[in-house]
Amino acid sequence: MAGKRLRRATNVVAVGALLTLTIGSLFAPLIAPFDVDEPAAEGARPPCWPHIMGTDLAGRDLFSRILYGGRISFAVAIAGTLITLLIGATYGAISGYLGGKLDNIMMRLVDILYGLPYMFFVIVLMALFERRSIVLLFVALGAVQWLTMSRIVRGQTLTVKQKEFVEAARACGAGPLRIIFVHIMPHLAGPMIVYAFLSVPQIVMEEAFLSFVGLGVQPPDTSWGRLVMEGVGGMADYPWLIIFPGLSLMLAMVSWNLVGDSLRDRFDPAMRGERQSS
Image 1: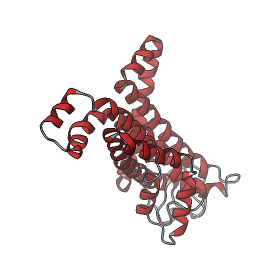
Image 2: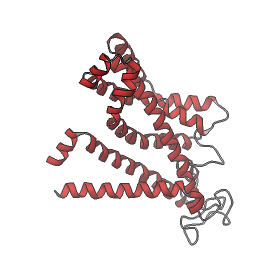
Image 3: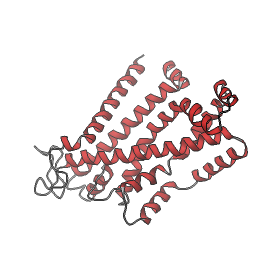
Image 4: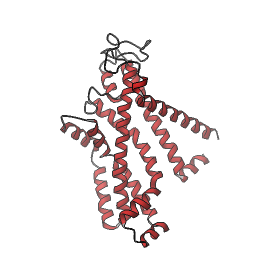
């Protein structure tokens, strides 16, 4: 019972933290106390009033930059997740419904892609384009994250396609695509939503890594990963430049993971029963 209350309190805190970060990033133009690109002080200053998180080496308010950086980090993560959902769900549903040799070929292709260093392909793709845009980052991250989604959807499709309502739709003359997208996919919304939530922190981390190595978000735009990269150089003398962006990134990832776990408990009866028994 105590464990259940603790999990509930943790979930409430995670949702609150996630909402705070999301609202702060979404309304950054209204909340940010200073212009994100204009110096607000002379050089780097530690946290003080009115710069509650200090300023960077160029004198820009760090709190304002974190708010605007969250917009980019969340945008990349959500867009990448939607691309993952679109590709993975479609691929997995088609493979699971059609079955047979086509299913075997499609899943062996997924197995092969699993064995490849997908982050290497993202780095190569980003390095090939001299003009790196946010849209390219969306596509690059989303296009390599769909493999697990396709397996999840394919496994669920193998079960759902045996249900009576699918047999009835087939008897009424519905084609494979109509059955997949109109009758089967809506019944897979739960697992897809859960995995989509669990994919967001992974994509946030990958965006941060790419920005950290200079292949992600490019100036004048910024993200939490880029802010961490900029803070590494002066970490010894100006520790706040890496502490606050790092804490924002960590809090966002932990909150997304906790919310995703909570949704998994809700949509997975077996997991929910196991948690309750413990």
